[in-house]
Length: 151
Image (cartoon, rainbow, N blue to C red; front, side, top):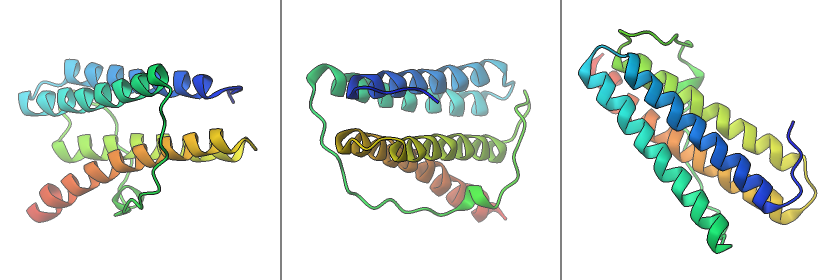
């Protein structure tokens, strides 16, 4: 597990994770044959670019306000099977992949918050976890609106 000694260390870690998400979704967009799916993954990558930019701004401006917003959890990702990346994956599988990825990021930041006694660092980790929870909710709502409505 990474060692964090400052808020900048945490932000650098989070920025790196957002870049990995950008790379992940961009790579998927590059291997998908279906143009609609490719567009979906490119949109996911753009979302992650926005998240990264937000973190960079926080780091540069040294302004951080922790939000205590309560994020809903539809728990859809808890009840769907893991999927494998494939060049012909369905929109449903793409949403599952995205939900599970965001859930993993949420768990990571939540766990990191328990690894420090510094209140500022805890709050930053919990805020980052909350952001990942928002991303997951966005994918769950899309899944609910599109996939559940089709069935």
